[in-house]
Amino acid sequence: MLFLNPPHTLDELIKRARDLSGKTLSELSVLAGEKAPPDNLKQAKGWIGQLIERHLGAFGGSLPRVDFPNLGIELKTIPCDGQGRPKESTFVCSVVYPLSGPSSGMKEMDWDNSLVKRKLSHVLWVPVIDAGGEDKHIIAKRRVGNPHLWEMDLETENILKQDWEELMELLSFGKFASISARIGRYLQLRPKAAHSRILRPQINEASELSLTCPKGFYLRTLFTRQLLKSFYL
Amino acid sequence: MLFLNPPHTLDELIKRARDLSGKTLSELSVLAGEKAPPDNLKQAKGWIGQLIERHLGAFGGSLPRVDFPNLGIELKTIPCDGQGRPKESTFVCSVVYPLSGPSSGMKEMDWDNSLVKRKLSHVLWVPVIDAGGEDKHIIAKRRVGNPHLWEMDLETENILKQDWEELMELLSFGKFASISARIGRYLQLRPKAAHSRILRPQINEASELSLTCPKGFYLRTLFTRQLLKSFYL
DNA sequence: CAGGATCCAGACGTGGATCCGT
DNA sequence: ACGGATCCACGTCTGGATCCTG
Image (tube, rainbow over all chains, first blue to last red; front, top):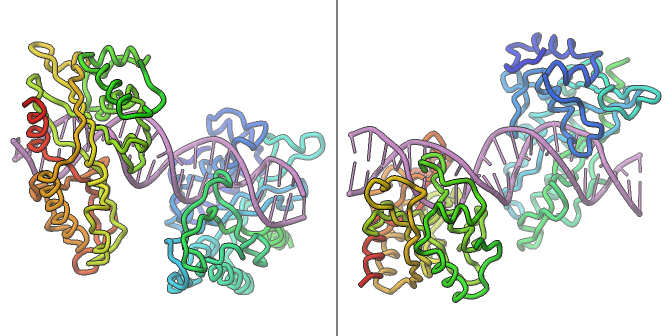
């Protein structure tokens, strides 16, 4: 069951996602007519997310928009341990600086129009659960869990908005030296590049040109753990 | 004789180029250990230029700099008919608009620091000559002609500078509707994209966002004909 | 544990130019 | 003849994320 076309309705998307739950990644790769899952994700880090995308009919590509534009839904595949607890942080989107320099980016510091808010407003969370016992580290035996359609609540939004504004202020003022993954309660900034030698020109705090590693917004593991737990209450 | 490394000196570059003259493209593809030349360039339009690049040890890649940075020399491969007369216009470089909008690009309208001047200041022209008679349309039988190292003279520079300034004014003021390949004596603007559906956002004359096909600077065939003819006087 | 580093796939942009209809 | 349209190679960028030391 591989969908090359996007779902037309929310119900159709949810139905497709429910049909995946319980299946192993091995089964999904067979259904998609692909080679077997890799032994290790080290050289195919995005493989699971893209496998799920193909099964749900998400647009591929590298466009900075939600996965199902007609439905306004973002898909997030979450790697979980045997107990269903998220193991990793979740990438949201890249930071795009228009080489702005101090304070010039202020007019774009609008949470309501930010890509982070747009991406996280409506999310279909699809957990992928580790197998138990000896099979714990076998990718092929991981299973898709129950999907959860989630709409951002006000309490969560307030915290994300605070985090985002704090981080955006550092970014727009070019305070690159002050930026670290330690900032932010739910949302954090971390490197997003092939490797750390990739540097891009930016205008820093002193209005000088400096080189900085590209960054992305990530949701902390603590946040997705709390969120997924709430789905089972 | 395939050079993977760039020439260290101008003499070395010229020697390499002279060693190519008289050879057919078929011979060069064999020397480079490549498959035979294509029957038609329709699906490999840049093939000849890149073959010559590999034989001279030019940097490949898509960086907007001259081909031999250490020597400050730009390589231009010119397709010529059986009489050695250029058949086509010559691409110089792409137009890069920083989404400027009216008059904001004026400070960059400096011919002496322009990419067009940098690329055309010192050029190694390498003609590639059509075979005669029945073989006229056979790519493999085209032959490399005599290379000519050329330094831009003042008379030529004045005309190129006038053309460039006229074209840049139209560009920087966003007068996209007024731009056509008819403008310019030696230099002209023409589309530079995979196809005409590729459109990029620009700020037009009325400070509105509009979509325009990417453009590039080209040397008119008339100019290169006149130039190559002068080499044989 | 978690901050910083890294890896693949596919889209995209630019340099190499020539094609082709009027 | 030539203005506008088009085509491949290849490097870069972004979305998909997970890896890996201290």
